[in-house]
Length: 262
Image 1 (cartoon, rainbow, N blue to C red):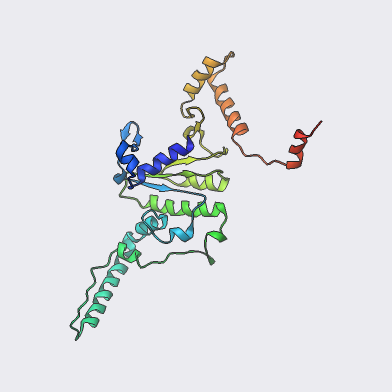
Image 2: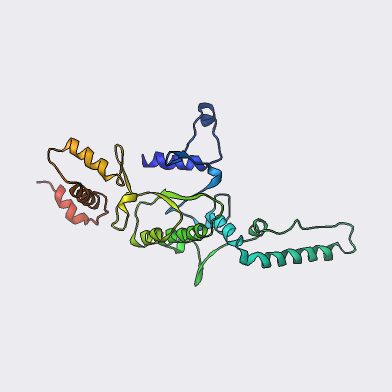
């Protein structure tokens, strides 16, 4: 179910159409509070623990760095500098055109054209690439870019950040909780106490939404021979998540003893 839902989000953001989807009229729709949203009015950013700095710096259409630079260069504080660059380029064209039958002209300079001239790179005291950064550092770098984009967004109704992260460390969760103005859809195999359970769902045979604790209480009452209070069910739920969905460190030599031949 994790994979299917993640692929559905990717499909929603994709402009590619396969022959199979075209012939069978297969598509994805996303609703917020039962209202369908449109891709053109919403930004979707996929976050990944296999994120490649080397690939992202190529600034392709899905590049996170590209989205960041577009937000950055549209900031009013750079308008005078961009205007000056435009004046200098026009001055260069006049010099080149002087006493020449072949004339040139620049088609104006804006942030999109400037971005094509850029070669971004990561620097933290020294220039680094993805092989110099830890998994958490790569994720936190993505979140830093996303935070800037969300803080300076005036174009999109919503910014959705989605992806699969097998483990959420305290540093990552502190950063996630600090970013405002985004809607986060993260698929993970690990529970962390810093998670807001009200914003968490468990995907098993069906989707269990922890924001609707009353429904969990009702379902448990139908299946259990015992009677619990709502507060008890809430605590039992937390205990279950901590027990079943928290990564544990195993010692192979201690574990092997359980499989010893008697």
